[in-house]
Image (cartoon, rainbow, N blue to C red; front, side):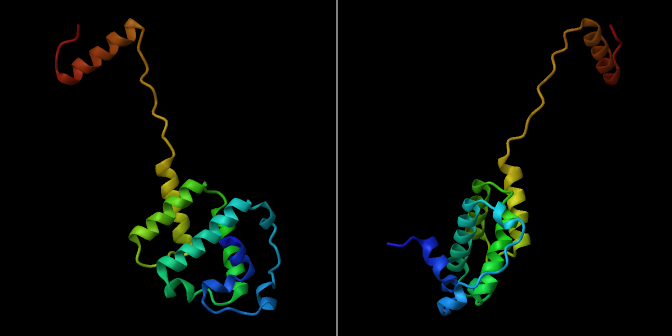
Length: 154
């Protein structure tokens, strides 16, 4: 049995619902300088995004993807743009669109949501409380607090 990625690679027009001849499908666009640097994992993620969005958004998504050459070009652009994000971030954004967005995103909107998800998922380093061990500093700080409160210093 062929995998989903094999099916999509053999006939990317399946997303649009307009199958085309294999000669048209196999025509490739010139590779960009960064295309070789994109991980195969991110290529699979973009294939997954396109397939899931075809399911989530139906004709609204598929109507944009009628030309196999455009599908390849669009996937390449999505790969290059999303290569900087971890899989967990991308998966979180896919689920967010599935659960709460009525219309499919543009690439720019998807990148923006990925940035938000990444910022949310990355644990922030909380500065540790510095212990004041010098009694002179502690006395000065206590004096400053009492002054603020309007009391006489010690």
